[in-house]
Image (cartoon, rainbow, N blue to C red; front, top):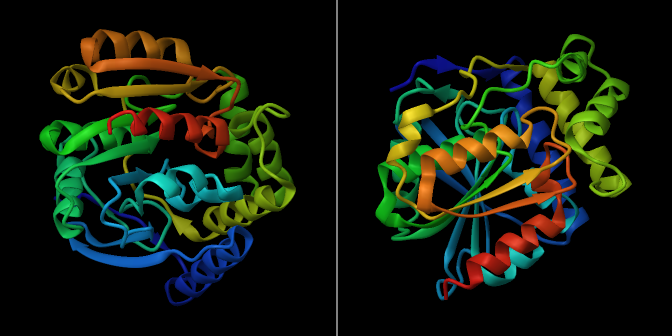
Amino acid sequence: MIKKKSYFKNQPDHKLWFESWITELEKMNGRQYERLSIETSLGNTAVYGINTSSHELPAFLIFPGFRTTSLIWDLDNGLDMLSKNFRVYLVETNGQPNLSDGNSPSIKSLEYGKWGEEIFNALSIDKAFIAGASFGGLVCMKISIVIPDRIKAAFLLNPACFRLVSLQPKNLYYNFLPIISTSKKNIQKFLNQVIFDKPNHQLSEKGEQHLIEYLEYVLLNYKDNTEKPYYMGKQLNTVKVETYLFQGTRDILIPFEKSERRARKHLNNNLKEVHTASTGHGIETHRPTLDHICEIAKKYY
């Protein structure tokens, strides 16, 4: 199952740094995340929980984008509304820069879907909503193929499963800039041009600085070997889960028009709604979008 292994170069220190970053986020948000640890076929998987002891609430699992942590969804208390209505599990996908082990499978296989089933079983979740941003959207589709009967609905945010990333010069320049020359200044340029659409879509100054600190640490210290997302093609035809697509009209990394056309083509009647907003690629940091997802999920009850 394991094909690639990513890792933090300074292995003894990265856990201390990451825990410090999470503690600061908890202080900023005024809440404490439950730390869960699950042994899976990809090694240890870290999960952060909100309201997980409130078993009367339905479960909602969140999967992060490429080279990110699921905790980014809660910058500026982005998950406030969801956490009042659901048991929220922030799953740290293996192979991404977080506290889960860096093992990852062949991206074109269904192994991430089987890994998702392991997560459901370990958390004793019979059925749940799932949501994923970018790479996380691809992971959600893999899970939906493997365990369709256990998914109430899937929410895809600027997903990376319907098309490859844009090869336009502007996108390539701003994406590679902080990788080639890592600095807070260049990360800021990347955020302004690719992730946000200011002033329609932005974080508070404190929230944005916390995101920059995370990205700078990851770019300097993480060896990324995980296979990149791809257009899933005919594999998507087998998805039988009700799916909602949320896209940013200002996303230059994965421009939304082709994604929507292919989502309609492959998912057919299982694509329930398509929503667009004036956001960049980082739509998981757009509070109105997260609140909208919550309102849709609540209608299932």
